[in-house]
Length: 349
Image 1 (cartoon, rainbow, N blue to C red):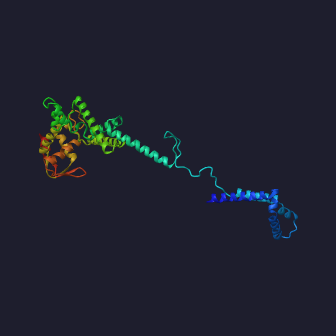
Image 2 (spheres, rainbow, N blue to C red):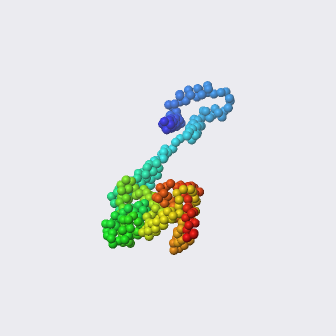
Image 3 (spheres, rainbow, N blue to C red):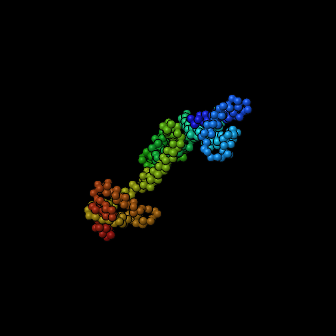
């Protein structure tokens, strides 16, 4: 709207200038002389009686009036604020210099959307590629990590696949380790069997990776992160099993525990009475006096710690004494006492 007003003003100025120039032509005086005379009389009637001859000469001189009019119009045109139309003031959403449809420069809000769309398209293509070919180089490391995680989570060498696979490939009569496994004991399998078992878990790792890729819509990064977390937790579980003694005992450990149990049962029949109370340290000392080979706690030939004797006492109370005795937090047993008369008889003998 403002531009239209300014354009009309310019046309008006041009018309006035042309009219003034026409009046200044010599051949036009005969045409406009009556008009000029009437205008001069009207202007003289409006003038104030100042007696200033210079002002009268300026008003009567057409050239000076024309110059004054041009100066006024020029000042108005300069002081009037105008908007340049040489360039567009609005910044485009996208600046692109394209050659054969290939964008070289991309700036603005629309370019950000295009970049996000391009990234999403590339990610979708990578996911489709993973779904089509799950055994690619990108999925190799996650599959191996899944193999290790499954190995530790299932119990490492005590995993439930060892015994069935061993019975399938070996004869129990010829393989002592398999006989111990079938008896519920731990026995280290041979090296070639461990290699075969490792191959089985690698295959399971690839199967797990492929399954999770289908569930995650081909996102290999998410599958790799899950594999790392599973491996860490599997390592924690393995350390916990080793620290708590939950790993199955070997044949030697089983025979030793069985012999210690028989020896403590003999001691309990001879020296313990199911009444009264005593401290657990008294039971430990009485057992060492009863079995001379265990008198030295630091013996290398017959090693036996106080903790193992306390475990034997707790086992005897649960299996042989039906849990009638109870131990307090301070280590006192109520319902069990040592038969001191048996100690006196043994000392006399």
